[in-house]
Image (cartoon, rainbow, N blue to C red):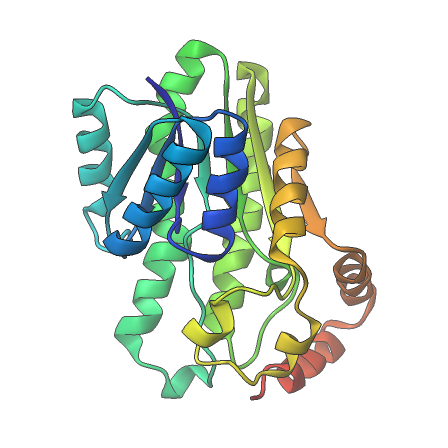
Amino acid sequence: MDVTLITGASSGLGAIFARKLAAKKNNLVLVARRKDRLDKLAAELTKAYGVSVFVEVADLSAPTAVYKLMKRLATKKLEITCLINNAGFGGLGAFATQDMARQTEMINLNCTALMQLCHAVLPSMKLRKSGSILNVSSTAAFQAGPNMAVYYASKAFVLSFSEALHEEVKPDGIKVSCLCPGPTKTEFFDAASASSVKLKFFAGAAEKVVDDGLAALARNQAFIVSGIMNKIFVQAGRLSPRFLSRAITKRMNIS
């Protein structure tokens, strides 16, 4: 069975991706840590759209999680024709004061698991001469982020990696796009212990972000910055001296 795999599917953008793609009659594999939420979403989508929805509970920050996930999917004879790498988290605070294990977990999830999943699905996509991958980054990818240093750096990795992969697999008929939303109305800020950070007050609608990402993937656009104001901020950051960009971002990343 051909399926679309969505990570971080239990809430936020991931759940919206699942609803949008189920409405288009995509069979889904939903991956996240919270089984109760995944089961509830799977039941909702199966009833509403008549699609097959497989729930896979996994902490993708664990070293062997991707390998074990792919092994389970192979056992079920599920063919991943579309991958939505949405899972990720951030954390607010000066780097030196942050828990090292938590920072390492962030890199493992935001970067390593994303990269491993891409590597896992590409061989079969190359054989089929088709497939699509959407990696969710952030406008954080375009500048350094004092007080969220590891998160910003992880999203820079996602953008750079995705753009490179886009060029590599284009001749194979495979689409790779990178979605770069700005602050978005999801659970992200609460999960990052940043519920009062200034950037939260610029948060945009999550549905628009998902629509932009899926549209970019459909036309195989290497990356997209979602939202007019976010596009302006990114361009302004590119034109500003880096010391100024760092200083402004530092002030914004204070709760």
